[in-house]
Amino acid sequence: MNECRLKQPEKSAVAEHILKQTGDEILFQDTEVLDNTTNHYVRLHREAIEIHKHKHSFKKKEESLKINKAWLL
Image 1 (cartoon, one colour):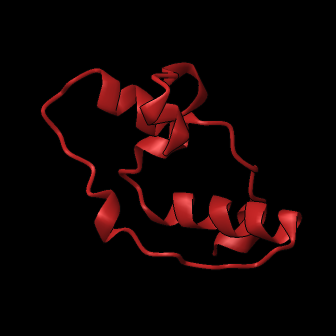
Image 2: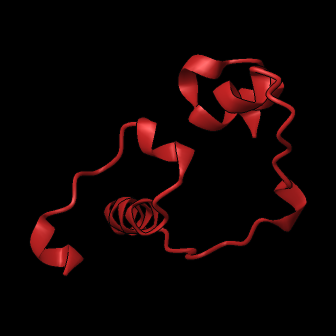
Image 3: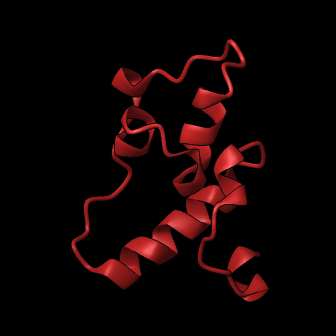
């Protein structure tokens, strides 16, 4: 992740978390691609839904697409 390598915590919640040196380790090698669409808007919607599904995601602090509650039922 470029923001981690470049030490830019203001650009990413992941970079901020890692650079705080909390002792937590993010296992980038164990990540998985959930979707590989090339459509920017579809990707934004998919990301917002995945962030919502994972209640303890620290990525929630980052600006993401707001989802209409009707889609979350």
